[in-house]
Image 1 (cartoon, rainbow, N blue to C red):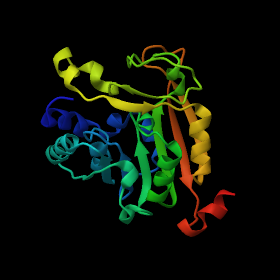
Image 2: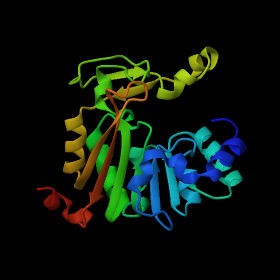
Image 3: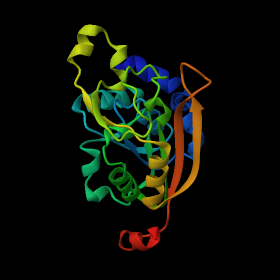
Image 4: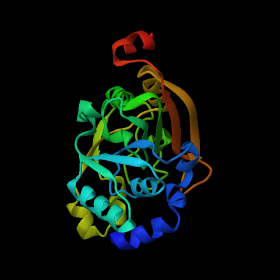
Length: 239
């Protein structure tokens, strides 16, 4: 991304542009409370904040936090940033957000997608929505995004170790020092069923071409809404 001041200048020029295709899933920004899950170095959180949203990033990296807060500061805005395991987000954040937002491929970091979706559901206020953009499950059998990860059976439930998706952008010396991650890739049906079974009302599932080949799927975007039920009656709601 470069230095925070350099990136902040680009963001300030056109915050909507920095949100790319995700912008169509937001009805408004001003005053909207957004939980950005695995928000990394703030490249989407900062434009959202500049547009008037109240953004809290949840991410596991202190280094990402330092960069993101500096980026927000030089861009002339502010974001909240919680360094934590997403699956252990404190209960004080439950029923707090209008939107939970994730992009850039995060589902594969979580080995139990049902547990992950239950947390997303709890973070939202009644009627709040989840915007989830991720790598298309088709990448399980073909490395069409050039992530340099192993291909496998589409129906595999294997957990495997591999590089972070962005590691390939660094030179060999830096790349060799980057930690490996433990991944679990899901099928389309596993993702959709987990969203529904967690209590969400699925509004749309949109597929998009790969960056390197427009003839095959590379990403998907999900829009889902939390029903107006409480934690006490969620089991009834799911039946």
